[in-house]
Length: 341
Image (cartoon, rainbow, N blue to C red; front, side):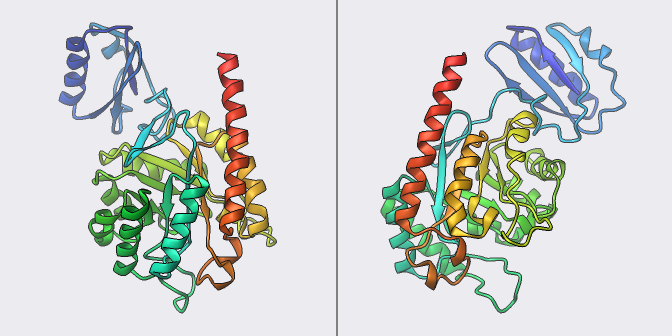
């Protein structure tokens, strides 16, 4: 349930409603807009009567939320969420590009890639220090050494770091180095991990599970949000279908659908969404045209030598071309939006 306060309701009236909800044993989530404040009731609120809140001073109306995800819904938070990753804005009218190798393979490889993606216009450096792989014999990442190399790249090039964390016990260590914690597709329903990152003060990039529905994806986000961390971005990285030609099937429908269902920023991953470097740029264009807030792209100076995901990694010069193209599309869309306002 949400309680919509009247335009310019007094702070004392808002506090009174919050206290009433908390006395009933529920938590609250406040969304303050330009004119109205919306108070979300967090918990199993089916026993509550909206009429009991509509008689309180300053309340305009109380409405039941039909979606099982509450804090993530636009009912609770009508306006787009915008947050910063070490000074880089994510969400709203901002185009955010994350780029780098699938795995941190060596100091030389990462520093070379970091320099290239920054020059091309990336805002955040991605790179895996810990890698969940289908085969136990595949390269699993450099672990702590990989985090240290990422830290050096951040210091040298000024790019915030996003990297994956795979288990709750690794959260404190990875959070020491990373500016944004990534929850991979295989971990989307690792609820202990979601709760652990929800208790940190780090922004989270939550990838969609390869066989997960949009509602399941949003419920995973709800775990993070309900533990106190409201800086969550969703990442559409493709789902598993019957089509074997591409690595996954990028669900382009999910991008405008999520813009309708949730206030959380949406990032698209054309690298995992296709698995083929030659498809990455055209699919990236489609992702931005569909309304995403940004991209995460795999870039490697020598993809043929990559220890993981070389087939879907762009060389730096191709990545630079991708950035130019998606910026042109994004700028055009922004002009259209402003013309309509």
